[in-house]
Image (cartoon, rainbow, N blue to C red; front, side, top):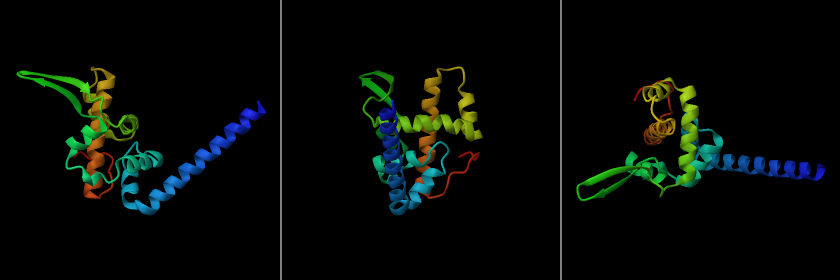
Length: 158
């Protein structure tokens, strides 16, 4: 048992050291974007580092549609002739970033009254579908924060 605890402490220390190094790197080289991302509710230090390392410069996306398609928060469509169906979330996506925004959406519901109102407006539907809508809204607000270079303001309707 003592050996397992030593192993756990070692792994925990390594994880903390690596996450501290990643945060320090982002604060040094991506300072502006890092702190802008941190201003968005639900996006903490580790998620901000993940977004910056996986997506790079968010300004490279022309619009929300391109970013949502890349992240996987845009619906997958089937179109053939006159038939058109929405198939739900696109399976070809960046799953890690999508999960970051879905988890951030749960936190944003708790901290931002406008996001909470958007969530409550859709109550009665499938909760998983609602949280994806909220994550999409949070993604759009995150892109706006980065493109306009202004910190997120809680409770502001855009």
